[in-house]
Amino acid sequence: MTKMAIANGAGCTHKNGLRRILLGALLVVGQALSLAVGGSVAAQQSYETYYRYLNDYPSDCETGWTEHPQGATHDRDNWYITQEKALWRIPVQHDLKSVSSSDPGVSEILLDHLPVLTKARFNHFGDPAYYEYGDQGFVVVPLEGDGGQGIAVFRADASLSFVTYEPLPQAHAAWCAVDPQGYLYSAPDYDFVTGISKYHVDWETLRYGKPAKWLKPESSLALSGPVIDGLQGGEISPDGKLLYLSMFGYLSFFSGIRVYDMSTGKLIGESSNGSGIFNFEIHTGRFEVAEGLTIWDLDDGRAPHISGQLHVFMFYDDKIGDDNAYLKHYDGTIDVDGIAGIDDMRTVRERTLIKEPTHQFLNVPFKTIGFAQSNAWNGAQINMKAGSYPEKLTLSKPVKLVAKGGTVIIGK
Ligand SMILES: [Ca+2]
Ligand SMILES: [Ca+2]
Ligand SMILES: [Ca+2]
Image 1 (tube, rainbow, N blue to C red):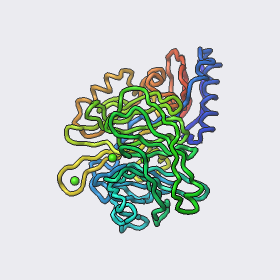
Image 2: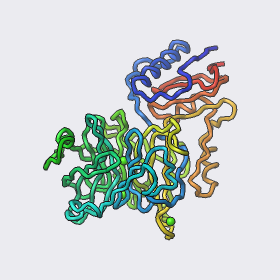
Image 3: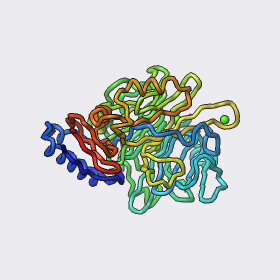
Image 4: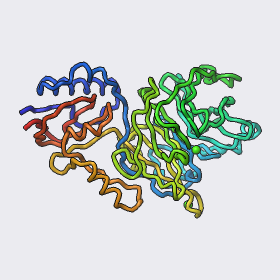
């Protein structure tokens, strides 16, 4: 009998803390159960992975920001949401289901009210990104138009004041993302995408003025796996290791989220449609469209009805008023419950496939830690409900094991 007393409860968001607990957990298991974990495991990459579908909120919703929503980013306390011709700043405590530009704390700026951009014939904001340099926060917004593509920079405060823009040598600019070092990424097109472009940003001069040139192309990153089409959104995880891309493909028939390793460009996972843990349910037949995304840890309960870390937009035009939008939420956790859990993925699939397309997923825990691990991504957290798990466990992935609500006993 092995008693496991591993990091209890509270989610750990600091990567150093996570790494420490992770190694601690592996050490405990390795010593106590003499499992073949050793060097190969330590050498495996651990990521910030967000792939467990939680819910849609808002769901099938029509309000101020939902006509052609394009994507989002955030600072510590606010959402920044783009529509084709608008940029919103919405406090995190505000219910996204009902938003008006006259609500307290909400700001909105319209593309058509920015003559510098309309003169340059830009007509479309894409999925934005946020970066803080010194004490100044910036929202960078990809621009598309009849005169070419660009990147616009706005101050991330209540004024949303426009700083400057610079043309981008790309055929399209549906999204941009910024990594922890301040490099900006975008895709050169939205169909037939096999890699992403990287740009150096001169944040220092952006902070102090309106420089003529502040973007400089760097070498691009090739992506492995199937060619992408209908690419709409991109985001880099806060640890800088993973690239999350959202797309709705008519050529490839793939719509949803793909996740790539930023150091190798290797595809490490993709969502499924209507089933599974990484569920991105989308009905392209009824013109549902995947849009941009952001990664923001909202497990602290500040955002009404929203939790998780990965948040992805989808919308469709129901022909009545504004488009109806969904915001899908994901985290990096798998629950295990030795009594009420399931140990057969087919069960999950059958249970979800017979359901009407309500964008809901029957999120049931797994029965065994081993089965949870086989469905976990590197870096995932496995929450074990207190109790006995009479299984022979071999850990082969860098996962974080957390005992929830009491003692967990493995192997007897
Ligand atoms: Ca778009
Ligand atoms: Ca974004
Ligand atoms: Ca509508």
